[in-house]
Length: 319
Image (cartoon, rainbow, N blue to C red; front, side, top):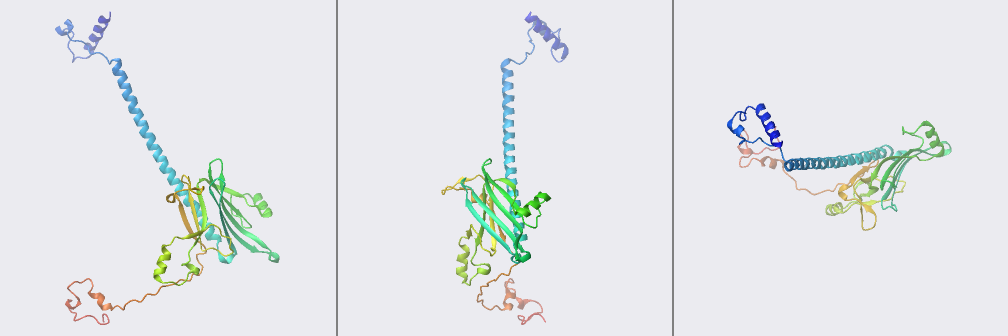
C-alpha cells in the first residue's frame, strides 16, 4: 500500500512538472528513478533551531541597542534638568540680590543621617511700612530634603512675602500665606544625589584684592579656591556656587555620600554684577620700541630701502 501511494504521488508530480521524466519512459516504468522525498524530521528540527537562534540573536541585539539609547537619553535629560535648575536659581539671584533693596542671603549646608548633603538658600527682601515696621517684601527659599521612597534628594522651592508671583497658588492660599507668614514648599524634581550651595572666597579679585607682585599673584591663582559652606552675614557675597548631580553616589571615607567630580555640574553666579569693583593693574617696565623697526619685520632681505620711490626709512610716517 505504501509503495503504491508513493508511486501515485510521484506520478502526480511528473504530470504537474513537464521537465521531469515522462510517465511512459522506460526508466520511470522500470522504477529506476525515484521521486524526491520531503525533509526528514532531523532536517526540520535543525531548520527550526537555526531559525530560533537567529531570532534570539536579533532580539538580543535590539534589546542592547534599546538599552543604550535609553541610557543616552537619560543622561541627556539629566544634564538638561540640572542646567534648568541652575538657570532658575541664577534668575532668582539676579532679580532679587541687589544692594539697594535691603536684600540678605543666607546659606546653610549640613549632612543628613542618610549621608546626603542638605543645602538651603534663602533670598529675602524687606521693606519698611508704618512706624518703620519691617515687612518681608519677597522671600525665596531653595532647599533639598531626603526622600525615603526614592533614596535620593528632592529639591523644593518656596516663594513668599507681599509680592507673590507663583501661579500654582490660588488667591485664598495667597491671603493665608500673607496673614500667617508661612512658607509653602513646592517640589521641583527628585532623584538628586548631590546638591550643595557655597560661597567662593577669592582674595585677589574684587573689593578684597590687595597689591602684590606678579610672581606671587600667579602662585595665588594656581592655589585651590576655598569655599564657605555657611553664610549669614548681612553683606551680600560676591558670588554663589551651586553644584548638582544625578549620578550614582558612593560612600566616601568620611561616611557621607558623594559623586565623582566628573559627574558634578557646577555654576558660579555673580551677585550684584553692577557693583563698583576696584581693579588693580600690575605695571611692568617695557623697553621703548621704535615704530620704524617694525617696518623691516617680515620683508626678509628686501627692506623699505629697496621699495621703488622710497629713499631710506620713513621718519615720522607718510606725508
